[in-house]
Length: 467
Image (tube, helix red, strand yellow):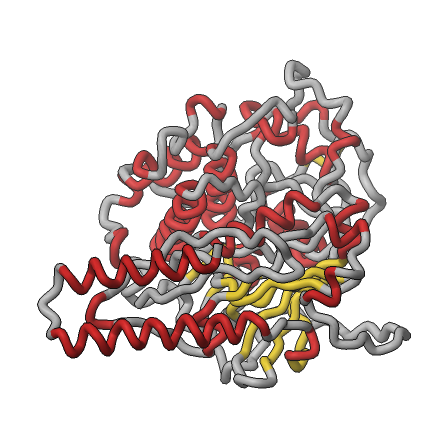
């Protein structure tokens, strides 16, 4: 397989050279350069990556499945974000397909809108994703700081989210967990989609009593209580006295919900909750919920317990309301209503161009969004700065230091049933391995489509020779 890929890449280069105005001498130099890179890549492939190759630094995320921390690669000195997921938890909670899809999407989708994946590997206990570190924090942190965004700022980040969702849909992936926590900011303030959601997915077993034909309106909800009062009925949440009280409660609980083992369903589409079958349009519902939160201050169906939130989402026709106190343009309100609606009528069901053509985006230069100044520039002091993330304490675990096994042939002889569930997980991005971009600049070679590795114990994929 590797030999075929090498031959294909050489043929691509030769075809580019044949149609270019490059001297014969320079053509020979470029072909030799390609051969050198192929040889170097094969050598680097044999060097199996493991957690011992990194200095583990500050933790910036933690949940039921694992953690995310900043790390430094010892050999190159490069700074990355390391996502570590516990295999046994993935299996116990039925998340194997989810974590494989995340790895595959990050490996296959090459876009400015998506967090870049550099390595993925595993050891006996954990799966690891080594990704670019974006020190600007996430949209959740921005919303907690600003409370409500101007339409200009919201339009910028909603537009970048549209591009991010479009890029994964083009590769036939559905994210299903688009929320502010997964929209990360780089040091210049530009947004990239990731999946740092380590929280437990919503336990839908509690939703068995939900009937989509049930009449659910404000009369079914309990009278509101003080913020520090007793918990409301777990079936019917509180009826807020005012939008200000709802905003206050949301802000007090937002960070806790983000990193709890309960999770928050505030951005999940009704068809996903009802398990009636759904397509890529469910991500556009999430976009509408995020846009609402940006302009109003809290999600459209927020309640003080997840089950009530889910019931509100399912009965969205009775609960999608815009507070009178909020000033919002008619175009913004119309777009939100076209996203938070039945799947068959939802804007974006026929592709992202439907959304891009909406009047609210009238003056958006879609091709230049990642070239212009961002709507917000986070404060970042150096490549190791973590001030835009929540602080987490280290958890001391009394266990012997693991020996260096990586993902090589030795581990192949020691495969466990857990390992077999994650075969094909290993990945190396060639540009990342080198610590810098390698390209044949004058020819702007296009990258062959990335493919998933077949055997996590010995194969690495995705050479990237793109400019």
